[in-house]
Amino acid sequence: MSRRRTVADQDIIAAALRAIARVGPSDLTLAEVAREIGLAPATLLQRFGSKRGLLLAVAKASGGGVAECFAQVRAANPSPLAAIFASFDEMTRFCNTPESMAHSLAFLQIDLMDPDFHRIALESARATQDGYRTLVEDAIAARELIPCDAARVARTLQAASSGSMLGWAIVREGSLRDWIRHDIETLLGPLRRSRLARKSVTRRGGPKRPESPPCESSRRRSPRTRCSYRSFRWRLRS
Image (tube, rainbow, N blue to C red):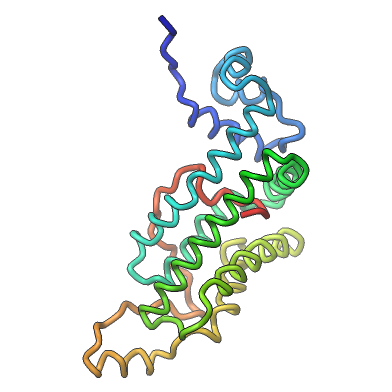
């Protein structure tokens, strides 16, 4: 009879993510993760086979929760536009220092060089873009955004968020959350419907839609969505 596992794989992967944030994937060792989770290194070796096996498990878990987290963000925010900003708030929770961002870039190197990691990275990137596309489509339907090419806007949101985070890591002014919100507000500003236009739709008998927060004062934090460690763990690939 096999011995029952006392520590779930997801807890080990969460510990590995914390260790990666501290030391990066290159300097990561099974011993480092074992200390983080309170297990023997031999247990991790038996469970994942090697350091590479553990990193692959981390990559799969990180990409696997993207759709789930987008669904949670949408459920927690009645306004689709607010949900877009909430998704970026979630992203910054998992990579909010220059050091952790540098370690994410080190993981990106693995994604680009190793075919197994690249396949997972590609799936994650596509899932992320699909998530933004759905939110943009919802915002158009809610008359928060003007009609536009949702797929192109989603791709631009994905690219802009990664570039914004890198820009903050270099300049280091203010909080990352405020920095990326400012950039996304600048991107979406020309696509936003005016309040007057939204009110006129309501007066004509259409359903009243929740208004999104104004660009200049979106300081209130979005409701916590309880996304797991897997979701929105930022890398340039996502």
